[in-house]
Every structure is written in structure tokens, then in C-alpha cells.
Length: 397
Ligand code: ARG
Image (tube, rainbow, N blue to C red; front, side, top):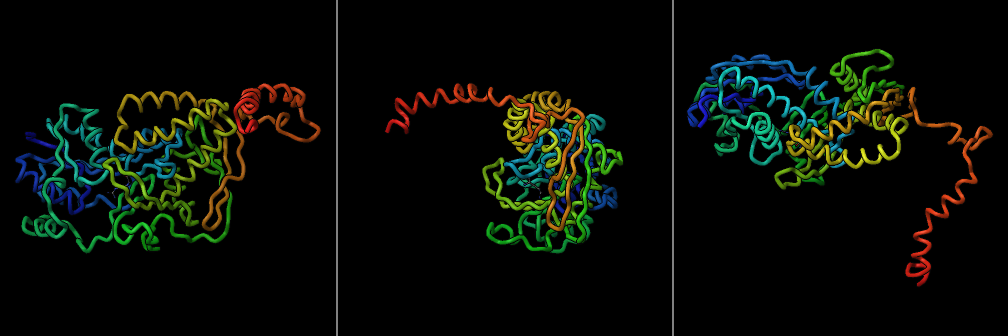
């Protein structure tokens, strides 16, 4: 059994109760880590709460820059959307947090990692599999999965043990957010037919009424500027979340397949992420050679699945990263987005090394395409099905 563990500490009811519960029921010492990954709430007061609950140490880390450069840049380059839609918001922050939990485990000579996830979700998988990949020697503790508390039990336990938990008013939704977006589950939305109540949205509340254009610049697949103003990626994403979100665009409503076999109704808002990925994929349409683009499209789904399934740190993901990085070499250029209430769409793209050839594409006098070449090409292209049809296909029936 572990003697000392590093807990991913949000400061909420569950992780606060988890500190004391692990001390009492698992006989461990607890070091708490609170990470800023760009979530809305503040970490203020977490130190007092953690130490008050019995933690032997508390560490707070601002991981926004690292999150953007090492976790979000790769998924932008890969256009990674789980099941074609979800930009992996929560799935991306977990491996980063675990990386720092492991570093703290070494610093504090801890022999375990702990998290406050339930047994029904994906996040437990991501915390634990990431830890298994980075530090196979560390034990994994999941108190919330073991204790069998209802929310009322947790509130009572906190009160009995003098654990500060702040306001514990009825929690309608399970929310997880960071720089990349916000996930909202539960409540009335557990009925997949029920429309999400307007009140669940925070990042995509429509306030803008006037349309506008916005130009995004990319260098080797990574966004570097908005309207010509260069900025660090984490700031660029924050800025885009505000600009695009104000048009009420960037919401998702889907039933997704969790790793643990459950179909789950989830809603998300990720205005910056979805706008960036739309623009990036568009820029690839003029900068990637056809076969490379097609093959990349095929692997993008798989890449997103790996991340969703907790395999951020895995050999296949690493190999995919190498492929993606090579592919992004020519993906430098600009994409113009048009923002209107409830809408965001591409209206133009350009790149210094664009493969779009006007002379080949045009139907006007500048046309350089050799039309006559197509005759023989198409004859050979269709020869196989022509033969099939004549002998045994629809044509012969
Ligand atoms: N379904 C999403 C995922 O698995 C979001 C999970 C959000 N977590 C939460 N505790 N609400 O990535």
C-alpha cells in the first residue's frame, strides 16, 4: 500500500473530502496539486482548504502555457475531434496534470497518485493510464470510486470533519472546463431528447449583433496571430474564445461513447477550439498534397480516439505525432473567418506555398490544363468496371 500520494486537487467537495478520507481509510499522507489549465473558477483558497483537510503539502501550478504549446498545438495540427465532433477538452488536461503529479511524487518521495474521479467516466482512465505510462511504479488511488458516498454523505462527512468546502448548494450539472472549452453533463440533459436549457451556456452567450471578419495566421500548422497581431497560443485561444463565443457559436450536443461502455449525452462549448480547427483544416486543403491529406484524414479519427481513451502517452500516439509534424511543414498561411450571430465560417484562405494552381483550376482563357490528356486517362481509369459490367455487372443483367 502507498504511504504518500499526490492528489489532483480541484478544491471542490469531492477532492476535499478525499484528502481526509484517504488519510483515515487508506493510511496515506496526501500532497495536493491544484493546476490552472485555464478553467473559469479561481484556485484562491485551495491552499487553506487542502491543508485544512489534512494535506501535508499544497502545490499550485499555472500550466496554461504548457497546456497550449504541448497539448493543444498537437491536436490543432491533427484536427483531432472525437467521433468527428468533440475537441477533447477534458481528455487533454488529464495527461498534463498527471505529468506534474508524477514530478511532484518524485519531489515529495511519494509512491502513489490519486484523483477524484468516479468509476463511470473517462477521466479515471486518463489519470490512471497516463500515470501507468509515465511512472509504472506508482500506485493509483481512486477514493471516490471506493467510498460509495452520495453527495449528501460527502457533505455530512465534510461537516463532521470540519472540512471547508464552500457553498454546497445543489449541483445541477457536472462541469469540467479549461482553455480549450467546457463540458456540461447531467441534470435534465440525461434525457437525450431534452433540449439543453439556455442557462447551461457560459462561453457562448450571444452578445454580438454585428458581423465581422477575422483572419487567423498559422505557421507550420500552429496558430500564431489574429488579424496580424502575433500572440502566444494560450492567449490567442483565450482571445478567440471571447470573440467567437460572443456570436453564440461553438456549441455541441452529442451522445458519445465513453471508454467504459456507456453512451452518454454531453454538451460542450468550445468556440475557440472549433473555430481554430475549422480554419486549420481549411488551410490544409490548399497546402497538403492530396494523398497526404487523405491519409492524414484517415488517421485523425484514430488519433482523437487514442487521446479520448487515455493513451496520450503511448507509442502509437507518439508515432502519429511524428507523422503529423512532418505533414505540417507547408501548413503556413492565413484563413479568413466570417462571424455572424450564431455562425462562423471560412470565407478565404491563402498560403505562400499553396498548391492551388489558378492555371489548372480556371475555366477562363488562362486555362493551362491539357484537356485532351483526360480522354485516355478516364478510359483507363474506368476500364476495370467497364470490363466487370460487360461480363458480370449491372450492365450485363
Ligand atoms: N465526456 C467528456 C470526456 O470524457 C467530458 C468529461 C467531463 N468531465 C466531467 N467531470 N464533467 O472527455
